[in-house]
Image (cartoon, rainbow, N blue to C red; front, side):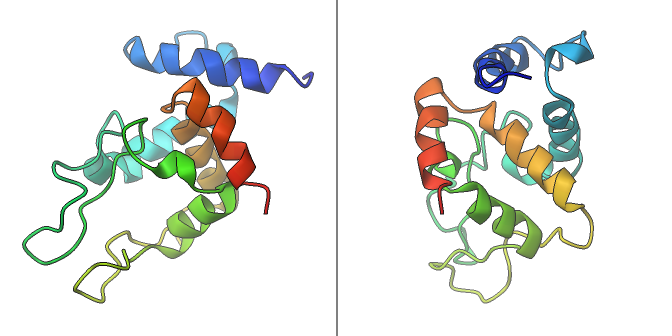
Amino acid sequence: MNKWSFPLVLLVAPALVMAGGAPTDSGSVPAGVTEGRQIYEQYCAACHGWQGEGAADWNKPDEKGEMPPPPHDETGHTWRHSDAMLFRMIAEGWRHPFNKTDRLTMPAFEDTLTDQEIQSVINYLKTLWTEDQRRYQPNESQE
């Protein structure tokens, strides 16, 4: 794969996702993205939405004083986090710092998913972002 193949896939994959699901030709997107979508649908979509849209009023605390699951599409802030931070959030879970409870509102998946599966989910999330967001995010990943 040459250095231009992956960026090209990141440009084409959102159109495939928005067109109504996984592409019929599984060779047209990297296996990691297809696997990531399947894992996302199994473990993440119930809270973060099937299209990555997040919970309603995701940016306002709920009745428990907890922040609801944010969107992972272009309307959220996932694209502002480095790959390392996203990996940590998925593996170790997350408690929003403004929550009034101490519990992890994002469960930890390190005992459920392999490192490669977590990375596949991150690769899938990137297909939900705009081209500008995908260009911005690698700068955050240079840690």
